Length: 213
Length: 164
Image (tube, helix red, strand yellow):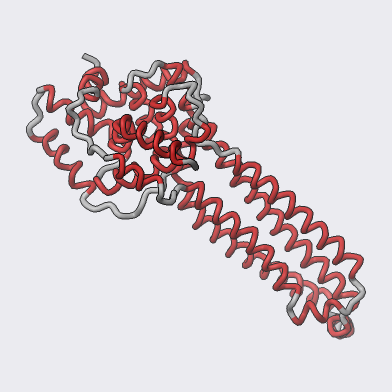
């Protein structure tokens, strides 16, 4: 006999001793909270949005930004800020829309796709923020080089001693190193959190996709 | 949610609880994990219940939610004590005193099924529950042909695990 047929015969025996939960046992269960990965993804994603929002506020209140605000840079800062908020609103809307589309009664593959799509939105938002961070740093530096007297003096001193190239190279490398460190820390954090949370889902999803190739 | 909704849900789940127990049996290795998964499946069923329209049987509807929870939503907790010990007992029997009685073979079969991956287990589960390939393909979200092909591969895989 086919192995599975043998198993099926046994599987259907009522004698299989499963615990018999009472009405009250089950009733108590529905009052408890879920600890599903969707719930965790939701919480972590919200924290990500909050993190970037807080970061933007914190940066605005620092002393160097106070100094920065004295410059004539509103023509760059205001459009950048507005653009930032519009994009935040867009991603937030997309995130909620995708989150609401997660339905446990969908097929296994569809459910996994909906969860991954929700994650995708947050991932794109994070990618946007990293690009935004880089763009902001570049813009801020350009304005500083034009208007910050301290920096202009430094550049002029370097030029006077014929070290313009060295000055700009060190400056650029320092900025790039700073950005790389920040980005690496963030990526490590994501790898840690989502690696743990989504490892099984990714594995099962690729297994299902493989079946339909 | 209203009391009558709660009542009808709990009553139906109480009657059909074996389906959930069977899923838990396939996807967990100890009683604690079994209870955890049962709890999560119950919560997911309850959350989805208001949208259950009754156009399919309650039990049929349960299969999807239970499997989806086991495969995708459930977050395994990090407390696995004695899990492997239980499994290795049967391994020993296999290596040392294998005999061809039906009971012995069943034990080995259950062990072999436990070695399958999450998706394969789901297919086996639906097959054991007498679901046809159309239902299996709809539940998993793959084509009927591929469900059939995969099922044949699983059968071969089980044979290999049993007779290496």
